[in-house]
Figure 1 (cartoon, rainbow, N blue to C red):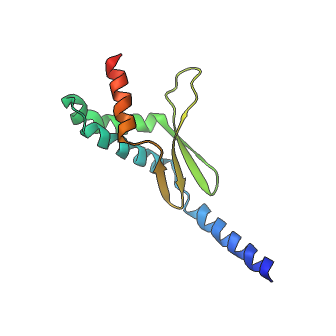
Figure 2 (spheres, rainbow, N blue to C red):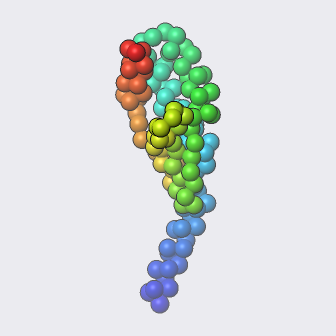
Length: 115
């Protein structure tokens, strides 16, 4: 009887996780929000004005996701040869957790501006 109850609980949790697994658009939105927030705080006027708009356009092209039935992961694929897509987010139970923050985006911008 205890095994049956344990199995039933596992099945219920599995079904709940599968039905609330975030789709690719949720990953794009979450990643875009983090990047847009970082760009609006940027000291460069052009980047702070147009950054959010550009992030949304770029996110549609560069952010992909893989669905693992109970969870999903989002990747940023820069489409450069020999470079693997970078893990950017994890989605589970209807929520997307972005694995980088505003400071990471600012560091990336600084490295691009310096080159």
